Structure formats: C-alpha cells, structure tokens
Amino acid sequence: QVQLLESGGGLVQAGGSLRLSCAASGRTFSRNAMAWFRQAPGKEREFVAAISWSGGSTYYADSVKVRFTISRDYAKNTVYLQMNSLKPEDTAVYYCASRKSNNVLPSSSSRSYDYWGQGTQVTVSS
Image: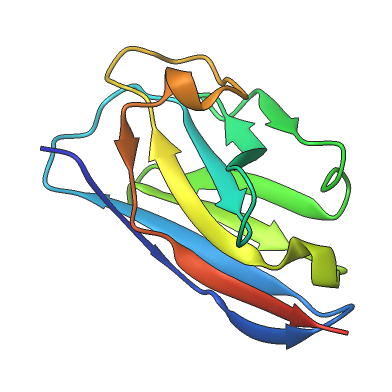
C-alpha cells in the first residue's frame, strides 16, 4: 500500500532555506491531494501547506505563507516543500500526508488525510 518517506530536514540558521521531499512508494499512481504538517515538542500537530492532485490549488497556514511553497512532481510521485526565510519558530518535525485515491481536493484538516510519513526534523537556530 501507500508509503511516504520524508527527507531534506536538518539544521539551518535563521533566514536560511531547506527543501523537504516526500516520496510515495509501494503503490500505483493515484489522484490524491497531499499536504505537509508539523509538530513541535509539546505542541499539537499543525497544518502547514496542502496541494490538490492537479497542483492547481494550494493552501498555506498564515504563519508560512509567502515563505513556503508546496509543489509536486508526478513523474517521481514526490511532493516538495520549499522553505525560505526560516525562523526559529519553524523548528518542528515535518510530516507528509496523503489522501486516498480520488480525493483530489486539498484540506487543512489532518482528518482528511489517510497516509502519513514518519517525519523529518527541521531545526532553525537563532
């Protein structure tokens, strides 16, 4: 079935950039919306960005709008999160999530997503 693997996390200074990748494997290509969430220690998981199956619709949390960009590569079955102008408050474990096949619309609710990666750590130093 669907498996998601995040990569690209690491340690970066404030103002720096990182690009996270989420590679889907173990399944045939499907029409699914995908998203990124994050969770800091002691805090609840929060929405970051989402993208429709077509890639034509994207949504961002206010805290990351303009600074972050979500995109996808259909040939590689991969979703990306380009993070620029990083701030210490962006420090968290970032999770990739996918809806089931034929759920093409993006959503900011974690309830809308059926498959999750294990997460990749992003640490931004001040």
